[in-house]
Image (cartoon, rainbow, N blue to C red; front, side, top):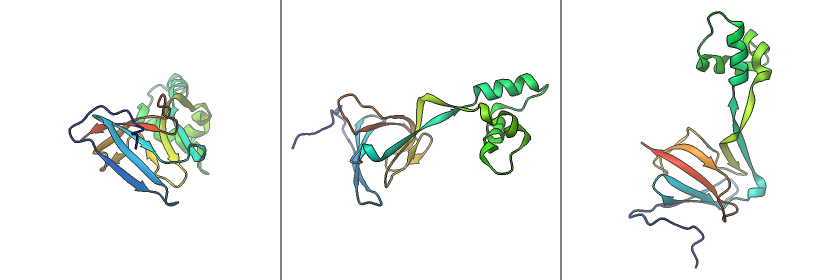
Length: 149
């Protein structure tokens, strides 16, 4: 049987299967140090998500405030825009938060597994730092870059 993934030769290349709730066999295959391919899902029944871009909202907030809170605190406050009891910050600046469409930070094939930047996977031996949905020449394959522990 032909190997579908071009592989950089590794001494201890790893591979494992994840069975999702629909009993699809999702295959994770290491193709280089800290790089894994994920396949076996139906790409027509998958979703991706982009990271939030707070730059416009935070810039407007900083212009309005004499002593602005740090960006990390602002992000936690402004995202309450989608909650029933909005804070004054989220009410005023929440609509200014947009998506950074140059950076995918979540992939979720129907039935799972949900993978996101920042997630730690013991099977991958590290934290996901990048998700690339378009591997040239390999339709239906998602590339995950991992930061080892």
